[in-house]
Image 1: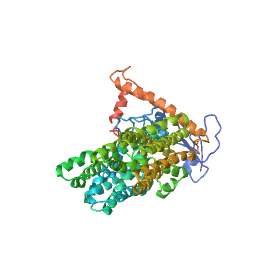
Image 2 (image 1 turned 135 degrees about the vertical axis):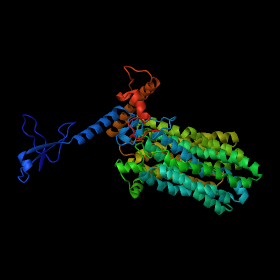
Image 3 (image 1 turned 60 degrees about the horizontal axis):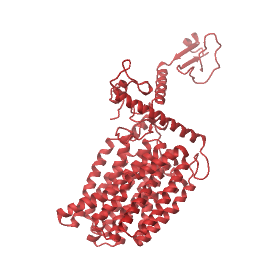
Image 4 (image 1 turned 90 degrees about the vertical axis):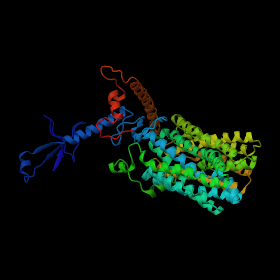
Length: 584
């Protein structure tokens, strides 16, 4: 049996071809020619043409939907569970968003971003819930400085292993369920802190609480899954920065609010610190229980649904793990140890340092410790935002120069802080190096999504674990050295790490000092600029259409892509026939 295109009227038959070929863009014909006499009906009519109408209609429908997507940046791809999004998306990147609409909480993009940072915030809060209470714990249990710092080191050791593991887990299962499970699991040992009666018990309980630190990987993966790579720095910066605020908030919440309140109620400092950790643990556990039911894994839906629909590949754990271990990953690992590692050790050290250096009580030292972490409100997001802006004009080279500059300034200011003699000078310098520390964190994770496109989770896990390794290294220094010497050591390491940016080279992208972007990268940046312009225009037109929704020109007003205001409102409120899932 041979197949060929049907001959057109007045023309000779075309050459025979295997299979079937569309005769034009809108029609699909299959012609079967036979000379087999064993098929009498076919022999009587040697040319039989089958018109595959259902297949033609489906192919045309899919083509029309993709064309509509190209014209309308709010339109969801055909494979998505949604019909329309609240913010513009890049269909070439799996419907990832190209804008951050921070005041929106609609699914899937902005709901995912807010769920990511809130989850990390609560995880950070329980992770460092014991930190502002360490002086009281030390007094009650009669512990040495070395024993207190040993517990802080064990608090980070668990997170190192868990971050490496959770990266490939996110690649395969997304971030939603792993985030919920880890938060609930870490809440249990946090609530049990009051049962501690020895240095060994404190070290073990903080070891298990440390699994909360792995939620950083899920939060960064979640943001990278929802937002395009060109704004990954901004999205990751917001999630990481606002999540890190949990470390600052716990200083005030535990050390300045709950501890003195419960101390007055019970009349005992010991009973106060033994009871209050139950409160943040309960809040975090409740959030973990509801998280999976209020959010999505990805713009097109949840991973389980996407795998069934065939819109994503299954990823092997070991393959993902190996793919994340590249030279670029290890350099970013070291540099992240020199920014996030510094932040982690300061979450443990700040209250103890001001207790020791300036003889402040726990409540006052906790207030100052809050100032360090509070820079996360803006600093990390600014680092990511600047990285994205430099990428538009300078590409990866701009991201790398920014990263080196931020780390260099951070290291210099840490050394200045080590020599501060007055309380005011120490506070001002601490806040200054906090800004550069957190901005550097945002800049690092502006680069992470480019290292390995298919295994971003594994890369994020390795790089994120670097922060905990840095905290352990610096923690050992603070455990065995005077505070001034420890800060000088930490600042020197940070300065040295800044120059490693020279050796980062992302394939197809320009390096810091050599190499050029290839044509594909240049075209991608240009496409992103055009998309931003088109999306900005579409947002303005959409806002105008909603503002003047009651005005009709010829019966109905129109918006971008030819959709009417009325039809847009119907889609957004679930009146499109009831078949499509909608963004609550």
